[in-house]
Image (cartoon, rainbow over all chains, first blue to last red; front, top):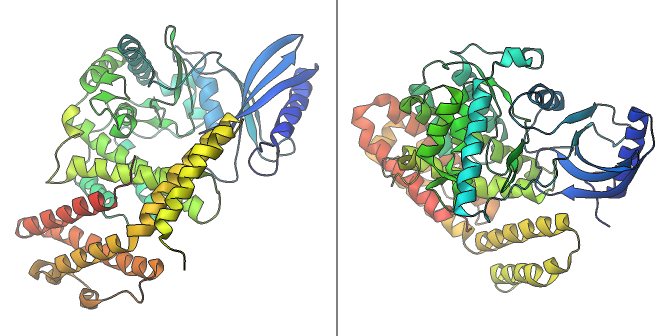
Length: 349
Length: 139
């Protein structure tokens, strides 16, 4: 039988969530089907079909694992969904955040399923890629244009000064690497020194930063367009260039570096973002954020590797990230900074 | 003794991917096993060549640190002649890590020292490039 992670079976996830929802909605809820979704490295993710009031309803349950790729606060992630849901940035509707482990052995959240959405862009036609790509970066531009305080982010996270965004993020991820590295990391260390010597200008404005805005983290319909932005667990308030640079990281277009996120030429993505956000991209500052994001990525990947190697989790996706992604991200950093670089990735920005 | 352990692991991995994986009914388990077979494939390469690749790194790092500029910035000259306690992966890794930490420190010092050490800094970047190419994982 397929197992949920930890001490709860897949069947138990279905029955216990139905019991929980019955209590919350004060009406009978029956689970018709439960599936675990692969790849949710920060939370265990399940898709449930439930029946309530005679109608079928799709739900997504995100359960805290004993460990995860990203050490995050579930309340922040849920709060971000709740804050963003009323805006023009599409996200799944958040329904419940349950901190009490009595139900599933760990805290969890429940969101409405976005029906029909897919994340894989590999099968899109060129016209579909163009359309989804345009929308992807327009949505990110709209997010950048929002005022985080008006959205209520000051109630769920700290608001940094515009001049501190870069230094704070760099300090955080430098420490993650130092804490979690299994072997010393000479290329990321050289990159961190470069980043400290080339600090960017203060953020043009403070924005909500998704923190992991990339192909694979949004649902779309090839004809209807972008349906929902997912995985807000690394969101924070900061410099909007951080998100734009992350979305253009070569890791997301490894097989086709000329297309950002395997969708659009980089310059086109940047132009669409500028139009939607009303902000401009300074080339030097943007390079800083690109290099920073490669360092941040190394931090994420080696943390996952540390969890795997020290036994906190035996999830293969953590080892995959820790080995293969770290290897690729080191090559990306070399491409940005080495005097012998062929500028395979830097050239496309 | 297991003969050709790296090849054996590679073949077992292929077997998992071609005969076991397609029979799994759950999409979750299929994806999970697919990732595991990719990782096992990477491990089979590491098993075959990992120690030799680390020894090549060690030789290159020691040569860099033994140069005139390397010696001027190196805190622990004993590292220049150090050899692994054995050829086990753990012992080779231990010396590789020691030398890498020393190289990080020397590289940072070379950057601080500025122009006289610019070429030496480039040589270190050259090693990073060489290291990345030597250890690049497939896929």
